Image 1 (cartoon, rainbow, N blue to C red):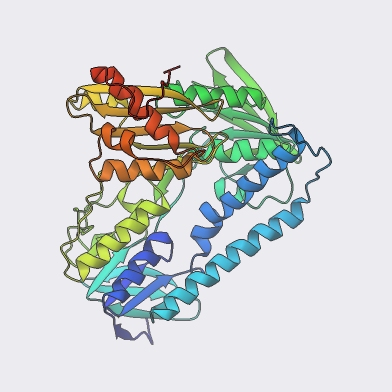
Image 2 (tube, helix red, strand yellow; image 1 turned 180 degrees about the vertical axis):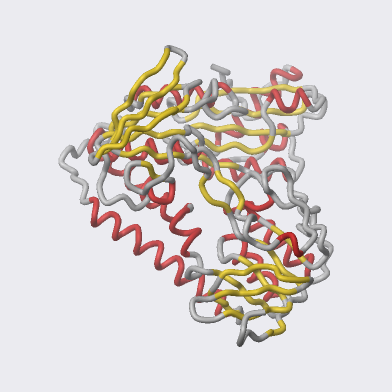
Length: 469
């Protein structure tokens, strides 16, 4: 026991003030529980600065700059737009700050108490919170672990914040790197790599996988690869960064590729090879909570761990690591704590990659559905020019199993597809839904009509003959 430390009784304690923790805190407070959030940074600071708010600010402005200077194919081309990078960074920081302030206001409105510090379990139902100037103990009735994740590192490319950076550091660079090497061409690497390409960087991407985004429908991947070629992004698949030689002005990275060893000169090397859960410094040995081989906490459908007093949500319980999934799980945990019959029962959680073009997927691919024993039918159509849209359905019942889109506004259109899967909608339901014209969402009707024609030769319900091209 720390000298001078005292113990307070708490009702529901949330460890972590990110998207999941905030959702859990607000829902628990709505249900009449007294809530304390323990967070070392300002509320929302870590998740907002390293997550969607900060990245979307940069990605959206990169797209805007590209359209102004390179043109969008419509005949409008400004050509004189310039980038004020320090001003853009200040603008991004202002947006993050405002978002954080709004979150703090919402928590205050629900009388959620904030304890600034680091939490660690020290006994059954007992936490120690270590702040900047003092520590205290919190005895809780229920606790939710929402500590998120951090970037995975590579031994050969240890981050120094200068030559080698992680995704969070990439959002606050002091200047645009002339040459940027992205090690790890997953969702984050693709998003940031393409954004910096539009800001003017010469981008090279490296990944050990045989194809981009393994597990994604090949047609969707081909759309993305074509766009990378158009943007002159160099892509090395089945390749690995094995050594870095640093210099004051950058470095040289040695790659092992199918064609042999290659050296890449770079000003910055962005390492985006996944994330690991922040579960290793919580004192879990005091709780009896189960952890899998990757460090993820084991929970049931009510987000409850093997310790009945402790729940866990978000990145710490596994993929997908997204803010909307964490928020959903946070509400489930809060309702379970309040005694409601809530459980994690979403049939599908949509995933979005904010690349150019946007990629949005929900549900199964055709391969996954067939592997799970479904009789499968699929339909594929061009989407918004160079994009692609695919629907996967169960042949026997025409129930929608998955939708995959690459193209403009995919992140918006996919929400309707997620609702369709959640509600058990069929292709017939989609085909009979009247969509406003002209909108991107019309593609769902068109896909459904093509798929139905493949199943039973049914005529298109709209009376228009859409070709599967």
